[in-house]
Each structure stands twice: as C-alpha cells, then as structure tokens.
Image (cartoon, rainbow, N blue to C red; front, side, top):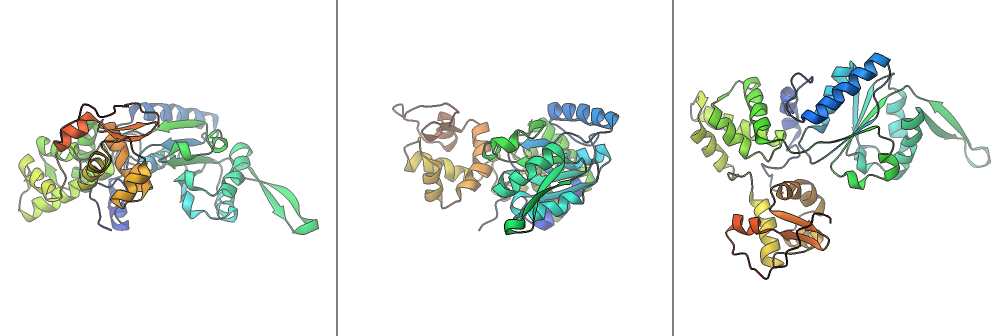
Length: 343
Ligand code: ADE
C-alpha cells in the first residue's frame, strides 16, 4: 500500500520515536485544547488534594490529535506511572488481569482504541473500574467458584476514534469525557514553532503558516510535514526557511494549499462522478476506491466533514456544493441536497 503523507496515523515505528522527542511532557508545554486542559487541571489538583486516584477518563476524536500525549501529560502531572496498551492487543481477560494486578495506587492504565476490546475483556473491566476488584473463576466443572480479587485504585484512561462504537455499559463507567477536536491553524503554528526549535531548524513566520495550513488541524501531520521541510531546506543549503521554500517542499509531497491529498480528492470525485453527488453508502465508496471502510471513516471523512466538503445524511454520504467548487465541477441544481449531519 502506498504511504500517505497526510495520514493521521503514525507511518512507522521510527516516526513514533521521533514524535516521542516532540511530545509535550507537562501542561506547561502542551498547546491547544484549552477547554479540556482547564477541566483536567482542576480534576488533577482536586484528586491530588484528596489523595485519591483520578476518575477514569475517556478521550474521543480523530487520530493524530494527541489523545496518547494527553494521557502521558496526565500521568506526569499526577506524578504517577503510566502503563499503556490497546484494545486489539488484549485478547483474553488474563492479558489485562496481569497488567491490572501490577498497577499501584493512583497509577494510570492507558488503553488506546478502547472500542476494540473484546466483549469478555470489557465485561471483566466493569467491576475493576467500578469497585477496583475483579471476579475470577477458579477450578472447573462442579468445583468452579467465583472469587473476588482486589486491585489498587487505578485510573483507566481510554482513547477512541469512535465513541459511538463503545458499549453504553463501558461508556457509563468513565467519570470524564473529553472530545479532542482538530486544532485551529494558530495552535498548529505554535506547535510547529516548538517542534522546529526542538529539531533545530528555523522557519520564518510565513513558512510556519505554509506548514500549518496543510496539516489538517493535526499535530502529528504538522510534525511530519515539518520534517519534510527540514530535509528539503538542508539539501538546498538554507539555514532559515522562507515560505516559498516550505511551499516547494510540500508541493513535492503532493499536498495542496488546503491540506488535501489524492485520497481526499478521489473520495469526493467518487461520490460526484460515480454516484451523482450522493447520497451514497460508505461501503459503496470503499468498494469503488478499493479502500477499507474503517480507513475512510477514521482518516478521510473527519477532515472533509470539518471543512464542509462532505455531508453525512440519513441516506448516506453527499458531496456539498463546496466540494464541487473545490474540484472545479459544475454543481447541478437538481442535485438532491440533504445536508443534515445525523447519519
Ligand atoms: N506536539 C504534538 N501535539 C502537541 C501539543 N498539543 N502541544 C505541544 N506539542 C505538541
């Protein structure tokens, strides 16, 4: 599969390692998401004053926006260790039991993609989250009995791109919910400035904006584009990167001024050309593009929806007039226009 420079998911483990060096450690370094940060600071201070573990927290929102980063910041601010895992990595109850029994009072268990936990594991978590104990079945057949095993008071921080896929029972066991949305370009500029400083590369203000406006409001993409600009400037022998140089570097990567790439354009073109502008089901779009539905829902749609290029209606996906405009296709007046965001 071709790698997409604008994917909000990490491209590789090597990229993850670089990102680690760019990751803010504490709230003082963290940029953006002001409402969430303000509420978390209060909750953390209150929990510390009461010497209690923090309530379980659920972060939801598109990938690449720093849900994992925030979990680490919370751990730092609580002065607690973080143990990280993910929904798909936990196959059996035994996997999570081992992790939970090793947690000390106040420590953080971070579960990425929490919506992908197997059902049995999810159910095993309910009493762990609610009463800090688990129900274990020992022995088999007629001798089987259920015993309760106590755990230390820990905090589960869950992250998901799809809050809707979480069972109601699991959702109800979180004490705090925070939506992590796309960052405004101003915040991305500040993030790129900070990262450029750490990576020892210098961009002027206009060059920072060239990177930011192509980053889809996503820090992970911004940091990736910054690294491409840094390489380009180094090869061209420039110490201080001006806007035209940043632009050249990013055009080479096939990213346009609004942060759209080939997959975004093909997604919209499919709706317009193959399905008369929609409404059309996401499965049909996926089949035409030969792309996984999950990829389209997680990685492509959130940004198109935010930009007002796509509408999700009761009857399926629909290209908006703005999408026609963007692609330079004439918008037909007899096009059905069902612009409600409720599907
Ligand atoms: N790097 C990635 N996300 C960041 C954020 N929100 N603040 C500072 N640096 C970041």
